[in-house]
Length: 275
Image (cartoon, rainbow, N blue to C red; front, side, top):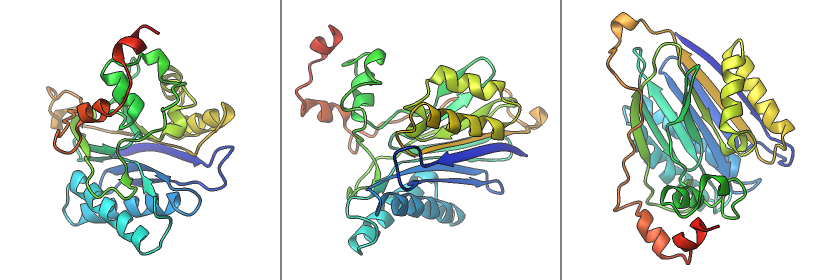
């Protein structure tokens, strides 16, 4: 049913790969986690998050609930002296049924893209300070790549924060479309246009995944790099042809108040827009 490809590399500067990935074909569960917390913590955190999400989906939990439980487990592990006290992880995960309908959930800046021959759409929004500045109009798209605060996360699984907000959405994977899950080690090195070109020109998804990761390494490989690609053989007669592929993102203002974050900074929208 699934056509897949995946690859990961520790990059040129890290001594350990703190990323984890999961491709569970039986349950239609795919995820990428990007750990943080240094040599002693990042890989521990991302492994905990991956294992807990997988286990809790088996127990009937939703992706959102599973990520919240993973957050608790990472904090508990740190309190017991496992990994490091500040360890955490991003997470982006999709769970599909046999007709291609999917649930999507994420925390942090690992991304999901929906890819067709003619287009590539980012389904997620980065939980980063720079992502927030861009969404609110404080900076332009051209300022993102080299912004000094680019790597500041607003949300992560673990990291000592007991209350997190998990963004979520739903969608439909159509025939001949592909979904990419990846960490920022890929998107920080390769532009969206080139990612799209590599995927649509590859003969297989495994070839595409390998080339994406190898290209990111060649372009600098400043971080761990992970890519997961998947598509489905879907019988159109059994699917809802009117279903639109989209991720509906809801921000819970009680848990994730972006305006409050900006009110605590000295950044001026008018100044930045004039640069």
